[in-house]
Length: 227
Image 1: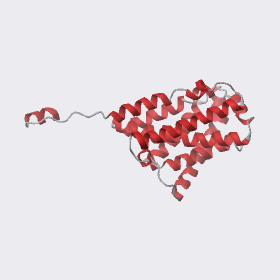
Image 2: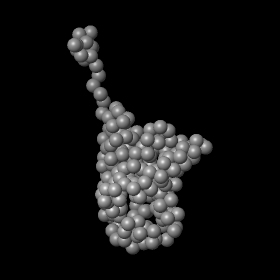
Image 3: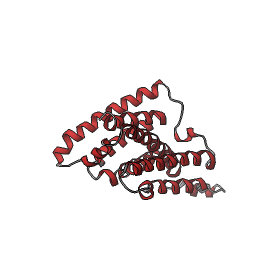
Image 4: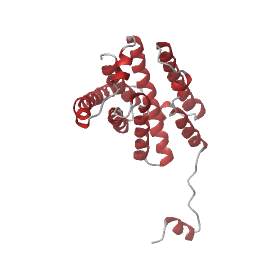
């Protein structure tokens, strides 16, 4: 069977090669840097001051990512799924949070015992021992930074680069899941992977970053603030 390029050549013209814009290289470089444990290397230690400093690093990374999108790529934030929230944003976010909370409870109460796995209770205890204002700030930061980077930026830019939204979503999900390994341990990957899968599906369904942030915030708040 004659291929498309052969047909085009016989017709007297060549199909154009797929271009690789410079912005794609910049996006990939930024993803690699952001996946490094920068905050932990810059500000080590488990004191409240050190943990607060690491949160400040994440907020700085958030501002840098927004600046990169707007000033370097010269694209609107809608290019990473941001739009003004509507009642549907909150309704879908609430529904997704309910699914995540119920699913995570099943993993903790049923799956972990069945598999003989032990979650990192020490890490959770350490966070719950911090002041309420700090836990609330962690929940807010995680919802904003992680959804902006893993769902909005990674999925959208990797979709452009790979040409396949499903591949972009899988890469984003794997990156999000394993980003939780260093602090929470291997068993927690089941929790992070399940939550990440729901949030990824929600983003693919709605392409509404505010909806994702709301769902993420509610889910983390149940464990880290209400808990």
